Length: 369
Ligand SMILES: Cc1ncc(COP(=O)(O)O)c(C=O)c1O
Image 1 (cartoon, rainbow, N blue to C red):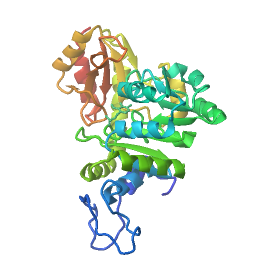
Image 2 (image 1 turned 90 degrees about the vertical axis):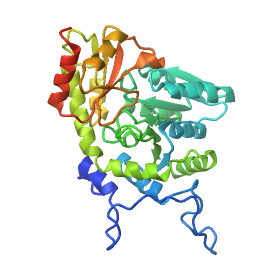
Image 3 (image 1 turned 120 degrees about the horizontal axis):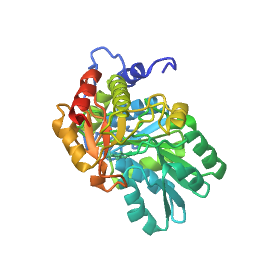
Image 4 (image 1 turned 45 degrees about the vertical axis):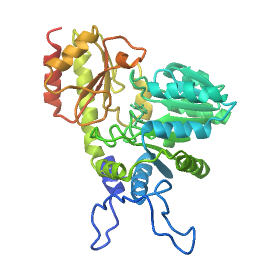
């Protein structure tokens, strides 16, 4: 695809079908567990639904194009993709670095399922990851981190991992491929949840891995076949459909996030605001060096948990929900899930509402302070 196209154009092109007269413009989902077999055994592109599916391949081709990858593999959820990537890259005896300040279920998996197999699991925060990488075999970085929105310097981390021969996996869920392309910076694999902004409508779970190393991709595909951590083809089709509009949605989410962060940082009820796109944010310089857009998430701290509940209750637009990237602006009080944050800490996921409406609503719901 042409390099000069913008992200919305690339997203639309990525989900376009070939112009075969009479074929539907949007091909439907292929709902099949079994396919007709050939006498020329092994020549069929599809044999059984756990191994491959034409709708996955459409989605995988689109995701690979957006991530700038040679190949992508879809999985049943972000966790299915991340855990498959960890199982394939970390072996007994390996030293694995996982984020202590990233998505909490990932470090739980590492502690509960990988550490007992003889993998040394080091949980480190974004600002410690470079030092920890100096003695690692596999590094999983999440940037910006969920929920604090710290940013890992990927240029520096790639340099360390390459020097050591360590594999670098980057969770690209919060940034999306429209926000950053870790593979172009030198990461070995992108792992991500497509449940969030890519699918974008809070109605399904999906995950993917993208990479350029054919041998590694083949090992991951085998892991998916054997573990059965596959995506349903209807969900794959819904993600393809959503990807066509991700450029528009993500652009608005980023715009709304910046407007909220800018407004909230001066508000008397708000103790602190984190958004990598704010010029004064501690992560801004590093973010500006590796991100093309700063994403739809903003983290704030209010006085306490009651203040977060009151914000949602008084608002006409905010919904309380523990996911992000959807069309609605949502608020999640992260202490509820055991994240190491204050009771009044909330992660806001900016939706696609009109920016002026959203800012006015949130300011009014916060009250005078
Ligand atoms: C950064 C990050 N990675 C991975 C996941 C897991 O994705 P899924 O819920 O699709 O399994 C999440 C979920 O919130 C996440 O925030």
